[in-house]
Structures are given as structure tokens and as C-alpha cells.
Length: 69
Image (cartoon, rainbow, N blue to C red; front, side, top):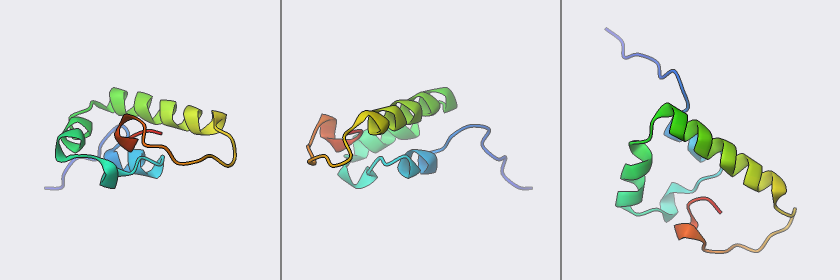
């Protein structure tokens, strides 16, 4: 028997959107791992929209634990 294919976005999709999991604590990773497909989809959409609104060259900043920004 094979495992079911997820019907929505996964943590891999979140990483592909630019979230750097290396900057997160174990607890923060656990929170992301517990998100529903709908929550992950919203988070990815927000991340993409923020990236689109950012200037082409932006200094790196440690905001919100570096999770999104």
C-alpha cells in the first residue's frame, strides 16, 4: 500500500517559496509542520506577495525570527 498524496501545499512548497527553515527553532518548525493545507496555502501566498512588493535589492533583516522576511 502506498501513502496518499497530499492534496494541498507541503512544507517543501513553503521552502520553495523562500522560507529558510535553518533559521527556525525546533518549536517553530513544529508549528509549521502542524499547519493545515489551507494555512500553508495562505502563508505561501502571503510570502509570494511580500516578495513581489519588496525592492529588487533589499538588505537582509532578522524580522520575526527570519521566518518570512
